[in-house]
Length: 309
Image (cartoon, rainbow, N blue to C red; front, side):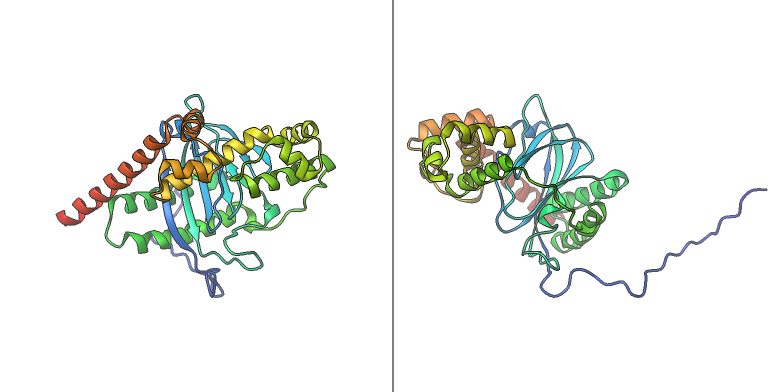
């Protein structure tokens, strides 16, 4: 006999349901990005965001990313959560094209955590989305599509979707419960000290010798310990940190390229241009121009769509 199915199915919300977005915890969606695989050939080099959280969904491609003080292998289906202040180096290029979505969220005050932290420091950064991948991808896609097309009330609609996204992310990450950290060995503690020093002083004219003097370590041992921890020599890390900050300044300010080069520790613009091109795949003026053109085209598209309506 054929199994009987109800014509109508109704699901009820629990009466004791409480939103986590109350009081000071009032998250705001800042931007949504779709990074196509071909666009990732020009990577966003090592950087951090001091006043918002970034959430990234990897849709295609694989690579090694340096996040905080460790390299992580990322692959399709991975969910990356960067609290404010977490340095991350999203390594990609012509041979490692990564397709992903990214959202930036400010105004987070999760219970028991510092502002603009979604997860505890020791909860990790990379999570497998598993069976939640399709739901997450749909949420990212809807936010990006509505904002890029300038749909009516897109900001309000996408801000609500962002709330749903945060709840889903907390589900994937087990609610952000802190996990017990493994004991950190002495060389890694020293590696973190070196990293913290570079992160504080990377815009200054520092050298391997001056780092060693400041930290009371021989330059040789300093370089060995840091590369064991991060995969980069201190000088390579310093260079990528400067280029990443330059990218931020290029897309968020109208400062001249000469001034930006000075601000991130370069004496000459020509040498800055050389290093920027080597690490990003295009010179700084073209990088800025591409960003501005993309933003302009998106605005014009949104305005045309509104006029038609």
